Amino acid sequence: MICILENSAREYAWGSTTSIPDYFGIPATGKPMAEIWFGTHPGSMTSVVGHGSLLDLRNQEPLPFLFKILAAGTPLSIQAHPNTQQAIDGFATENALGIPLDASHRNYKDDKHKPEMLVALSGFRAAVGFRPLAQVVNAFDQIAVHSSNHGFQRLSLAFSAWRQTLQDQGLEALFTQLLQSRGQLAEITDDLAKAVAPEFAGMGWSSPLEHLYTVPELEQLYPGDPGIIIFLLMNLVELKPFEAIQVGAGVIHAYLGGLGLEIMASSDNVLRGGLTPKHIDVAELQKVLNFDSGEFATLSAKKLVNGLYEYPRSVSDYLLYRIEVGGHNLLADLKLANPAIVICTSGEIAVGDSKDNRRVITKGQVAYLADANFFSFSGSGTAFLATN
Image 1 (cartoon, helix red, strand yellow):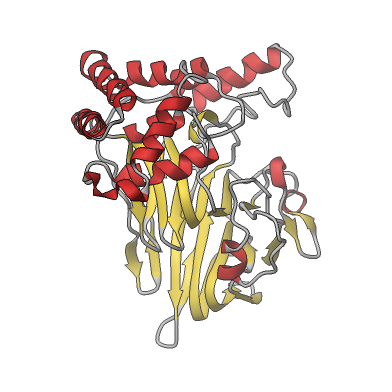
Image 2 (cartoon, one colour):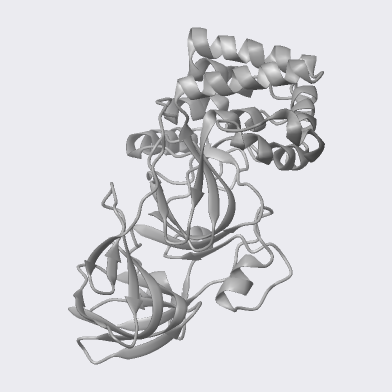
């Protein structure tokens, strides 16, 4: 079975009006196009051309993964996701309290964990995990000294105090203090944005202070938000096309900008900590967060055979491949243990199966593959295949 899938873009405020249309050659809506979901999650059910919903085609059996096109025009919220037990407990608790599933203050929309992987299609920036503590202390110390030397005394005093908290009590203590300071940081974040504006470029900001060049944008979008300071506690990651990051349970992260493909367990559980007008539950976020600190590594796909590359994974909910075919190579008789979703990201690719079904998908088209022993790919282009 080879079926064409379709869905409409979700219009979150942080989405880009141009990234998805420009890259995939699909019509722009004039509104932010943040995500296009492919899967059976009820939050945005995928349609099968000529067959109703994907869930109907699968006889009401949900897919264990959700595959997305994601375009971040502005930074997403700082957030983390629960592990399986935390999701089960949180979902049950909120159900017992009678909180509607669509309530804006609800934390748990389902009882599943939400590990995820993002593969960049363009240059992509993200903040992931807490930086090494020594690195954060050094950065805060430099900010305090530079601020004092250039007349930002209030800023210097704040960062000196936060540095001391880091040294004496650690990341969790400062993180909690910042979240509990919501509504009290407007002058500090405003000073920080001014201190790193272009006219102050000569102040000598450098590694480990690259984060500071993002601060004016964050301050403009979310003035006074604690997330602006929390962002400085996190690893800044720059992805090249086809590089990936994998985010497990409890890992703090925020996507800052770029176009990518995201695969995850089929869940919508998000605990937010900043850079958002949405609900923030400080106590619940602290329950799920992992406060370990260290460098965060990007991932590259491993070549399995000519034309087939596999991305490393740490969970069984999903498996992601990149397919590269051209005039001198095709990918024949790929055995898939479970149904798959394939997104063509360049050129055109002919997909065939062992039951003599065949479809040609072009850039921006998406297909569902199932009910055959083997699948083959030919033509000239690139595609990403998600399965489990």
